[in-house]
Image: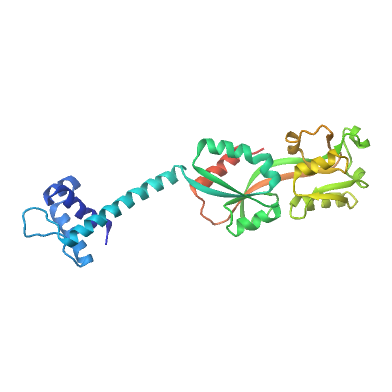
Length: 293
């Protein structure tokens, strides 16, 4: 059964005659009759009583007309829903975001996106950066924010944030009086770092080893604010991106740049290659691109 044949039948019933339905539909009367005959043949029933001068429905015609009304309403609703989708009025986007990145950058992104597309729901899935790539690859989230570099054979990568690591240290610590700190000067300090599921865990240890020492790990946490509080309590030092400085307000903690050592922190937005992207997701990626720092 074709929709155009059903529509032709509906028009004849609603206009009450073949002639008026043909005129209003801008088709010839023979074409209209042919469509209805085709519909009857397809359904194996007679829809119209052709022995009268006026349009008269058979019992089967009544059934088909009532069901046809439902079908046409569904088709109309389908167009509305698709229009909503194309205009980014509705939808859900699942984002994989490490807690640190979510805290630092996501609220502003969400605010701007919500202003433009208030009916698009952003569903957050918070995991360590090591796990985000797996979630994107398996299709469990639509996009993720990860620490770069990442596997560009699997993902489409969009640069997001470029930052540097600084030393976060208690203001009473002797090194806190310096303008800069050598990384190797921290070799005897107790480090407070992220837990193993976070990329920053490996990155800090690797950086210390490249400076000639293996860091002494005093505490591990999955929360950056707890790490800063432990530093504030003079229980150790930490290396964190400078972006955190704008979020942390503890005056017992000093933030000092590293001397003669480059510790970049680059973030990227990843989506799975060769995968359909919804219109809402494309617009979110555009919003994130405008926030690139």
